[in-house]
Image 1 (cartoon, rainbow, N blue to C red):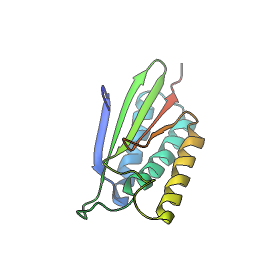
Image 2 (tube, rainbow, N blue to C red):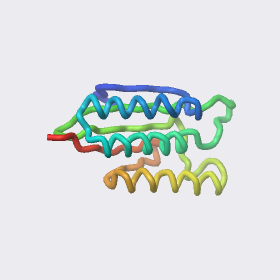
Image 3 (cartoon, rainbow, N blue to C red):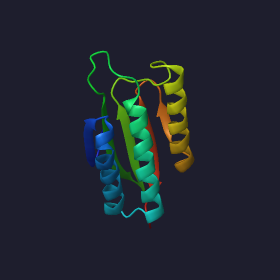
Image 4 (cartoon, rainbow, N blue to C red):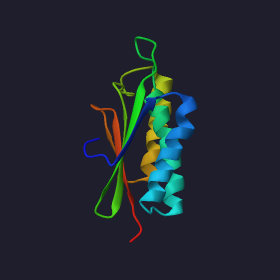
Length: 130
């Protein structure tokens, strides 16, 4: 994420879910996001990890997930990217269905969430308390 105020990159493995959730919740607290939105951020982080984990790489190594956070005009912008994974074209039909559900959950929590198929990136904003 360009101009990220905070960033984190980890392997997209289940054991890193708590770290990713903690990172986003603490960023939310730092930027004074309300508690309900912080809970939503933690759920969105878990679902993003499901998307990032996706199908295995050809090398057998786990994919990485990177998270960037920045503040722009009263909102905390979050970008979650999974290196080199397009869940719509890789893996099997079942993993694509799971990924579609994960993306739908993120979009229901943050209606403006954008998924960019080419860059495997999900972007959404969380309002900051005035």
